[in-house]
Image 1 (cartoon, rainbow, N blue to C red):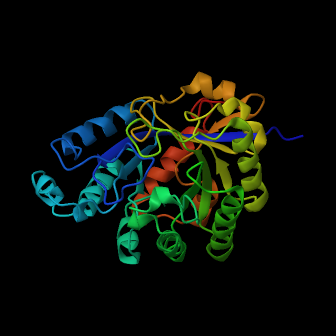
Image 2 (cartoon, rainbow, N blue to C red):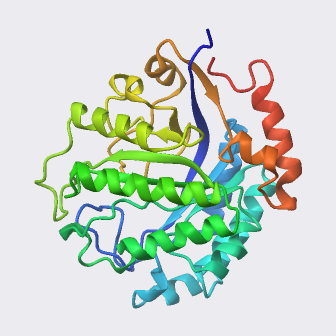
Length: 331
């Protein structure tokens, strides 16, 4: 009998800017344009270097969607020598590769051409679908239009980009909406084969947001949603939960395959009040399952060669390292 495997990745979380054109009712990540709203290059490089020394394999670049659409942002970005945030993430992706980290970019909505450009320096990319439902929390967020997000996920498939997506649970959608969202993701994967993992992420109320008084989904509701995801999605798509946002030890038995990216150095800037669990805690969460480290590009996509030629030496080296006895510590 095969022992069940639960995977995770070690990453460096780099929030390049907190400025965003969207105004989601549950978000505390977004800030106005102000001093400090762009991560300075020196800080990003130091974070990557320190993370690589700690054994991380992934540089996770996350930032607000289309920050250049917000008045005053371009002037702040210009102070570090850039006219476009995507030029900045492109250069930092190259810097990450030089330091032994595989880039994974979550940039919000990107065009086909923008995806194609960043594909050349990224091992994988991502965009949360969140929900196909029309909900009040997204009324002031043009980038959260489900059709727009589905179109981008489809374009990622056309470009053969190993991709992460997911749903948010508890932001005003119903269980039927969740099933519809998961079915859309399934259908995109059936067409293009590019969805590596689907995150089932629970809403956490944040002080100062429009939804600060909204109830968070309970463990039973999350478990039912995880089980639904595992039922709807093809077997080769991992179901992931963020292990810092809920009692993961009570959820892994509901159909969880992966515990996402965790960092030994950087915080979860989207949920700063929720520290990452470290390795011993991940082992406890995994229970009787084998805890196994992975890269941000899943093994099946390495085998298929779904990565830019620039990344091949690093992917091969990191894959060999985590596969070596004690290299991907967690078993």
